Image 1 (cartoon, rainbow, N blue to C red):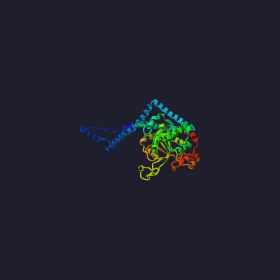
Image 2 (cartoon, rainbow, N blue to C red; image 1 turned 180 degrees about the horizontal axis):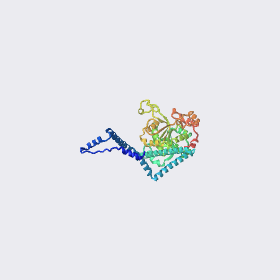
Image 3 (cartoon, rainbow, N blue to C red; image 1 turned 30 degrees about the vertical axis):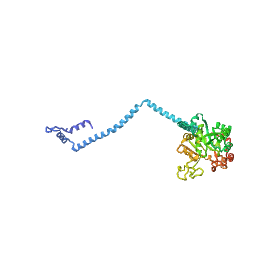
Image 4 (tube, rainbow, N blue to C red; image 1 turned 90 degrees about the horizontal axis):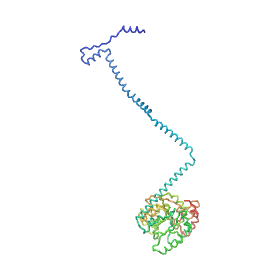
Length: 447
């Protein structure tokens, strides 16, 4: 349509403008607003709808403001942090990632190039380290025990009695190092038994000294003295010792019912003269294979407190006038009870720490009627490992003979019925022939 015509049409139908002229009678604002609403060309309902729309639009816009502001704020923070990262940090991040990748490559390369014997070498090193730690623990325990022994002897300050604690402090600088000290329990009347032992499993003369030098095995017959000073019995032992030089004299009055006291004094005296790993007590009517004994004890060398023997638990005999009667039977509970576990008295071995314990505490260690029971009672309440080795109590032939033929050589052999080899003077040679490991065994054994 032509603009000129459109304009003419608009002019031909003009809409009269609304003019509001307040009259003087409208003196208040409310009257003026009322007049405006009444005079407006829009209806009241239309004006209310328009008013509600305006309010709704204002509420919606107010609600959306924080919704738009929060993402914008976060976006700004992200952009700002990226823009303000220091160049050094970027370099460190790249360097760290590069090092991680290089370490991963090296570890994968090591895993692929592992040598076949590398795992074995690692296990060997672990085993050696473990052995070193055990050795250090044992040395520390030994030093502590020796210090306690020296302190005890100094406090007691006694050179009298059957002890030897004073000997320990006096002679400790000159103590000889040894692997095993074996004390063969004997009596004044047992000369033939001693000779039978010398002729079988115990070396004599230069061989005995060589065994001490090369293998660290010391063997002595242990015996005290008679009730009468310088009696004929004592002189006989002195003469025998001059001939064989294989006795350990104890400050002890000999007697069958004093075996518990003799045992305490033996360990105290042996400890004062030799610094050994093990101390062994054996009766003079028992056959022993020295090589097997040394090999067995060597397996327990790293343990600080071991008590090795044939463990048993016999009945407590309350009846009088019977062998092995226990006068203090009531201490072991009701009649018919058994003793606690302890090594049989024919042969047993103690580690250095236990021998030291006996030496320190020997004045207050209680003695029961039976020596093996007494020894076992001294270790109750201590951290002691009891090792039950049945090779230390084999029977005489054919028992030990069959075991030797099967390659299981016995450490010691005797007859349970006799608490030793029955008629040992005549029989021990036969046992040695059938059950002996051979004279060269102890020299060829590695321990």
